[in-house]
Each structure stands twice: as structure tokens, then as C-alpha cells.
Image 1 (tube, helix red, strand yellow):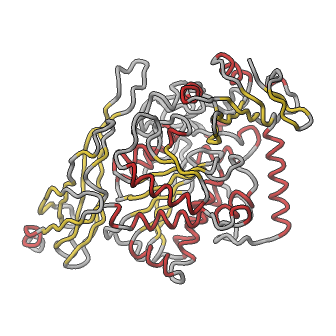
Image 2 (image 1 turned 180 degrees about the vertical axis):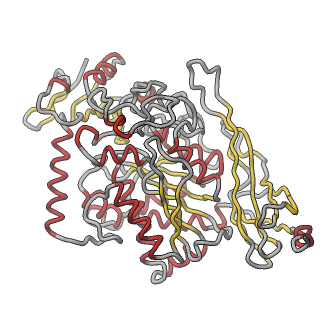
Length: 549
């Protein structure tokens, strides 16, 4: 075994590692740097179920160690490591001192909301409701379909000029807090919501985006886990949701904070390993104690079903899932084996956003193997260009000033390189017809048009009792209301990326129907539309029959 210890604040590599659990002063996990010079080493490390961070470089991956069991797994795998920090609790105390100093210096920050401290779950929910109530012509409160295991609803806001009318505009989706401890991920999403509302009429760029598209913002995907982490204490580093037992529909609220293993509540499902696309196999674990436990089945968790149903019911053309940390822009796929079918276009947008925030743009598998992520599922199911932003270079929730104020706006050490600008580039791409399909034509005023696709996707091979990948059905269905003699509908391309390497795009079609408001179908057509293509459709039978009862 090789490792390292901290002596008088100096890292001494190669000395015998002291088991973290034997350090009496420790109040948080330790941070270690695992030496992984080859891709095979990273794949092996990713299969251990450890608490890996997105901080990695040439030949290493940083990980949190929560107790002797974690060290035993590293030792058994023959991997070497050095200790970077023996007690992250001490680091958090330093961050809190910086937060207190900020609060003493100013009552209002330059953020769009003016915040100077991290929000609680109650803050998020209250502010989302207030935005919708104060600006009803711009903001609509969205409640997602499924309650969490502790009985909470997940909320977001949809922001657009004339937001109440389903009129066929494309959607940019921005999410935060899949992982409970990644507090800045929700803050950046919430600040972008305030930014759009604040500048909806005064900034020509934002005004155009809100006329041509919609922004859908869900700052807290995993409220159960976030509520536990935000309370600090032993659960501050909680990553997963509050799943305590597979198959149990709901849990008592106190139970999530009761079961502690390895110094952390490690029961739960990693929500960002539970999506159906490429679920299972390398890049996640089938062991409940693992920090990347994927759950007993694809979409077994209410949090992932919420996002699935949200995306499947709208034409989300670009999405970003905020995370921390590492200053990365990650794109699909999460496991090596061939690039995405539209890699050049996919990479180009990632590179453009990285130019704005100063991050590194790369395929997700170049960090370490991951599967069951939201961007993998969204791209291969809908064609939406999905990305993960790993915010800040330091920690999961460092001081508010650097991780939120400076990094969102592009101030301080991030001067000129903020996530605000990167999100605007993403939104501009979402409304650009060159990045999705457009269907135009004639239909009766007041008619409801529906676009439906249904197809089979597959997981990776999860092993265990499964005999190969699991097939599952996926349905996409969205609607718009016709407001004039001609309609324009921005749709994701019907040509769907194949999950099989080297196959490219699958020649599928949308089923478009023209209906009365009561749902009576008057006409149906099959429409094939490629990315960047505009297709003309006439619903002549619907026009003739719409007013006839």
C-alpha cells in the first residue's frame, strides 16, 4: 500500500497512510488523490463505489474517503493514493468564515437576486412562487409530476413572454441539485431565472430569447437529499436521494437521517446514475452502499421520473445539468466506446460555452466512466443537446462569494468568464432552428397539435441476474395550440441518435395529430424532420372538419 499524510500542512507523498477513521480530530471526510495513470485504472476506480469527485487530471482522480472501508477498497484494488486534506470539516469552517465576512461587508450582492448566502429548500420554493405570482405574464410555476420518497413536490419555473400559451417554441432546460451536497448548482440555476426576469424588457438579447423560446428552470431536482445536506452536520456531504429500501414507495422523513454507514448516510440512490439511457454496467454500482448506486431499475426513483416526464412532454432542445466541482463542461457519452453520432456539432457547442466560463470542454468518459446520466438519456431519447456543468474548482459547496457570485457573473478570478454568459449561449442555441427541426403549415385556429414518438431504448448490461441489456419503452408527447392561420412548431429532430456505436441516426418520424380542444383527433400525419430542416405540413382534413360538429 502507498499513501500520504499531512504533516504541518505539507503533503508528504509515499509515507504510510493513517486510516482516516483513526484521526480523532476529524469531523468530515478526507480528500485523497488516487493515482490512476491509465484509462483502465480510472475504470477500475469507478467500479469501487467510492465517492469520486469530478476533480481529475493527468493520472489522478480525487475522492472523498468516509471511513476505513473506503481505504480497504482502494488497498484491495492495488491503487495508490495521497491524502490532500484529512478533515474536510475544517475546510468547511474556513468557508463559513468567508461567508460571515461577506455578510458583514454587504447586505446585497451584485447577483440578479442580491443574495449573499446559500439558500435553503424553503428559500427556493418561496422564491419560485414569488416570481410566478409577481410576473404572471413572464413566469409560470411548474410542479413536477411525482412526489419524492419523503412526500415533497419538486418545483420549477417556465419563463417566456406570453408564458401561459403552449405555442410551439423551443425550450432550454437548466437544472441543479441532482446531488444533494452540490449547493452552487442550484444557486446558479436560480440566479439565471432572476436574470431573465430582471432583464426581460430592458436587455434586447434576453428579450429576444424570451420571445423566441422558453427557459425551464428546476433548481432543486433532489429536495429530500438537499434538505439533509443543507442542515449541515454529519449529512453535509450527502450525495444521494433518500431511498432507504429498494421497492418501498415512501419513507418516514426521519429515516433518511438515521442510517449512517462509513461516517455518512450512504443509503440512497445516485439520482444521476438512475436515468434509463445506458443505465447499468460500468460507471455505476449495483451495491446500495456505493456513492454511485444506480438503483434497482432504470427510472426507479421519483426524481428521475420527474425529469424524464418533464423533458418528454416538451421540446427541450438544449439542457444543462449543474453540478460541482471541477470547472468542466461534459457531454455524452459517459462510457468510452465511440463518440456521439453528432459529435462535431455536440462538441462545438460545449467548446463555445467553455469559452465563456473558462471551463474545460470534454466528453464525460474522459473524466471517468459514468452511466445512467441525464444527458446520456436526453440525447439518445430526444436528440436534445445535453451537458453537465461542473461548477468551481475547489469543492462541493465552498464559500458563496467565489463559487456563486464571482463564478456566475464572471468577477474576481473569473473575470470575463462567467456561467451567466455560458447559459445565454446555451439558450441562444436552443432557439436557433439550425440545431433542431421546424414544422410549419396550416391548421385551424384553436386546434391542438400533438407530436408523439414511441420507441424502445436499452440499458447497458447491468450484470447480476440480468442476461444482457434491459429494453424499455420511451414515449415522447408534446402539444401546442394554433393561434393563427399558419403555425410554426420547433421540434427536436425525428431522426434519433442510435445507442449502437457506428450506426448514426435512426430514420424515425413524429406522429403529428390535429385535434379539437376536447381531444377529438381530426387528422394524423407522419412527419420526418432532421436537425436544421424546415418541413411544411397542411392539415387540410382538420381545416375542413374542425368547425363541423
